[in-house]
Amino acid sequence: MQPLRERYDVVIVGGAAVGSAAAYFLAADPAFAGASLLVVEKDASYREAATTLSAASIRHQFSTPENIRLSQFGTAFLREVGTALRVDDEVPNVGFREGGYLFLAGPEGLTALETRHETQRALGADVRLLKPQLLAECFPWLATGDLAGASLGLSGEGWLDAWSLLRALKRKARSLRAEYVEDCVVGLSRRGRRIESVRLAGGATVGCRWLLNCAGTGATSLAALAGIELPVEARKRCVFHFQCATPISGSPLVVDPSGAWFRPEGPGWIAGIAPPPGADPVDPGFEVDWSQWEERLWPLLAARVPAFEAVRVKSAWAGHYDVNTLDCNAILGPHPGLDNLLFANGFSGHGLQQAPAVGRALAEWVTTGASRSLDLSRFGWAR
Ligand SMILES: Cc1cc2nc3c(=O)[nH]c(=O)nc-3n(C[C@H](O)[C@H](O)[C@H](O)COP(=O)(O)OP(=O)(O)OC[C@H]3O[C@@H](n4cnc5c(N)ncnc54)[C@H](O)[C@@H]3O)c2cc1C
Image (cartoon, rainbow, N blue to C red; front, side, top):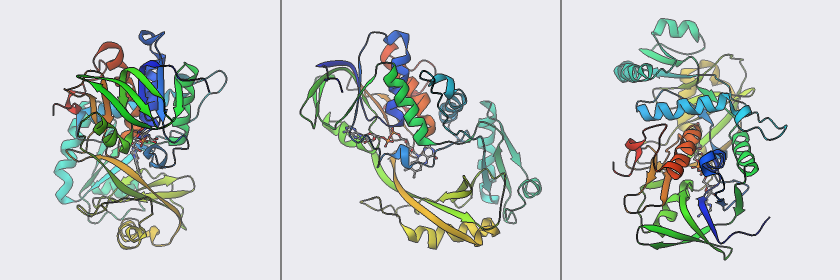
């Protein structure tokens, strides 16, 4: 590895999906030509990064227009990823499968589903409302007796391989001269409205014109180094991988009214559910909470898909959402008290799909002073 410079135009803290997307969009931007870029990543194995522990799914079925737009760009990017992130003869394949999302609603959730549908359609999302009879015809393996309707994504939504996307973003960014160093940012030097330099655990101090906080659940401690309180907390979420004796084909990612979700993964399935409100452990750790499967998830899945009464769990893992405790949406852009520190944190479970659009927005902030392609002010600090 080449020695670090004394100073970089941009230093990005965190080199997973969001940091590497920002590195790629910056390095690829002609307005950034000749500028220098360093990504500081404390663990190049990404063992505990949300990116690699994610369920790696993408949907357009949000209620907030900005979330819909961020994911729509994510889909467009994923469709062209082989071209955008090609390096020499290596054309990345991130396994993007447009399998769709199916949101199920009981009588009490139908009005909200229909309202969200209006917003999504107005923004061009390819979604369709299904009445119970059509739902039962399309998905005969679902128990639909208690349902009042559903919303199905016909195109644009689905899932991918998060590791492959991360590798491709990083490889492309490096090929365009982004530098990566495996080290941990442990100190920031702030003068007035600017961050002047970062201190690394390895001993180096590196000056920066811009600093990008893409540190996932580490973003809160990083912000604290600049004297800023970031309302982002780590919340453990478990994903269970299982196989079902009965073959079921053509399943989208299904979101049950209970909050339980499942989708195909290769020849098997993955599924998860958030803990009940207020039940998140104080110290999340990375151990799988098997009681979630036994006591909540499996009974809910078997009630929704009778074939899931006979399943075999193959494996499970736990990762950490970076939850914005204010409103469960990302915090994007500059802090009102600092001119050169940009935030991209608090994705609350949507960050993988939003990484391409957020990476582009961060690059635009650096090169033009604003997010030009999308108005992301709703996700700014001012809210
Ligand atoms: C179980 C689970 C399921 C999910 N499912 C989905 C999904 O289906 N769809 C979706 O869109 N999103 C999903 N998410 C959320 C998504 O994975 C995250 O929002 C997204 O990956 C965030 O990316 P990031 O790059 O901001 O953070 P991370 O992937 O957490 O990366 C942050 C990086 O910063 C590094 N870092 C932290 N502090 C420092 C420091 N001081 N110095 C140097 N490096 C540092 C870390 O080592 C890490 O690699 C899921 C998350 C989990 C946990």
